[in-house]
Image 1 (tube, helix red, strand yellow):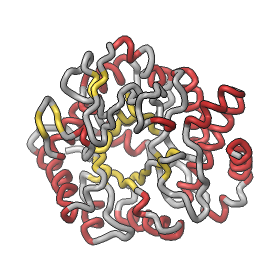
Image 2 (cartoon, rainbow, N blue to C red):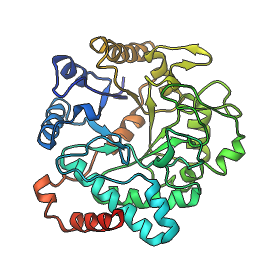
Image 3 (cartoon, helix red, strand yellow):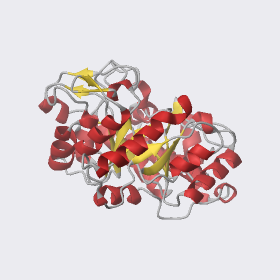
Length: 358
């Protein structure tokens, strides 16, 4: 059976427990996601990540660190980044300044995270600002798909300059629905044509640029009546890969969110959800915040369950998926924090960013 490590998991606390170490070395584990609860200070974060990577050198260490209200690390030197709407508003004043600001922000964001050992931030948000979704809100760049695409590409350039890949989310678009997929199963009743000509356009225009994509836990009922996009072969294989030509990695959104807890009208286990996501076309699946519940039994159930289901032939481990995961790992060594503080490109990006924010 070819190696394929599809699970991105978290840890319960600020230190690795014996259970954490065991899970990080499980053959199904390919990544670790960090949250604010894991933060004490930079030295602690750097040591924590280093300890995890000592157990699994190819571990992909991830975080949701977009700016605005979704920024996990905010103290001990980390720059407070504005929400993505900031760049959209700046665009309305001066489009070129806005693209430069987005690139500067991407560089600062990635350079600071990489200095602490973090490999990937789940950004940019490509959802359009329809003014309907509270969970998206100011996380969106703009209502116009063209503006969103150009600002996202600018942010992605900054990330790449600091050696970090990127993840566009939430395919094909979460901004048109009011319900929050963390606690509900949103349904978008627009036609396939309407979605592809508006919300999904950034994924078409960035299909040769995006390193990875995260689909939405939203049911687009006129395209796939039963399944959210992250569990739908129609969305992931026929449209994203087939029609739009995307070749990078696909992450599921968090399997513990309400939008992932029912498929085809039936309640499902984490293992069933994971198998469904992988069979639909995801390369990696996230399970977040379950390590804190009942000793992490759900995490163990997913890891062991996916391994057992692969052995039974209910999903097929993919060498291509594993290659896509590995391609997200940085290809260059990061600058240590003290070096970064004297690095001219970082200081210039920080100066430019601070000038606009103030």
